Image (tube, rainbow, N blue to C red; front, top):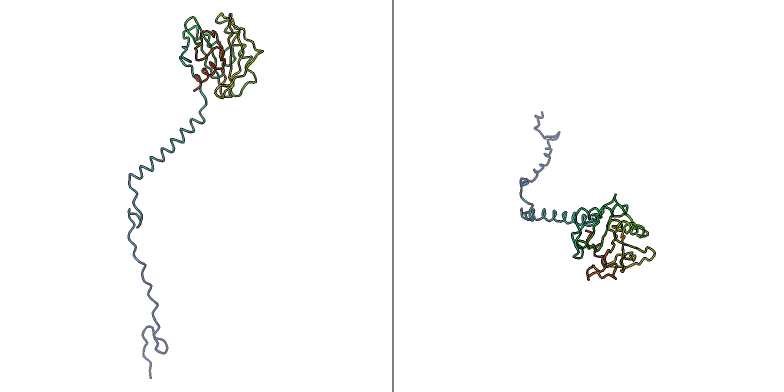
Amino acid sequence: MSQGSQGPGAGPWGAQIPAPPTVPPPPRLPPAGPYPAPGEAPVTRRQTWAILVGAVAVLLVGILIGYIVFQPRGLRLPPTIANVPRLAGTHWNDVAGGMIDAAGTKGRTNVAGVYGRPGSPAFAFLATDVAAPATSNAPTIGLLAQYLENAMDVTLNVDLTQPTTLRRGGVTYECYPIGLTSQTGFACAWNDAGTAGYVLALAPTRLLPSTPFHDAAGLSAEVRTAVIR
């Protein structure tokens, strides 16, 4: 018996070969859009601004703290110290400038002035920025006293052999007696590694009651507080 032609999928014995399984298509996902994922609340514009403002505030606070911590200490020349006015005018400005020259601090940041009433100077001071504390302030005080004697025609017999160490507000002041006409004055200096200052009392009887004559460091502490900013 003759064999007829076999259809597709027929074997030599007429068996059918099963077709391969059909792979189902992947599930269709919703198109991506500007919508949040399920379960997440949308971030509003107000929340975004709040985050930005908070970040800017933190940055500004950090800058301010850094400025305060690392800002170098500055000096200023107040118009009054302890309610005693600064003597202004060409003559007194020249005297103050001469104090800077006499102390040898011209290459640094300096402030100097003479304070008192017209015709009655009460005290003079010089403050300067320094890199390290000096071992003794006596040489500078001696130079300033000698200069002021000549510039102001006064007698300032400073005794550099009798230093006294006084503390005010955590700062050490090195003070020396000055012999004025029938009175005793003083010259004090501070050196705190950030600034150095020299205060010379020219007329103790005309100092304010708040800084009594016998408290040599009292006036010096007020000067230091007023000139450092």
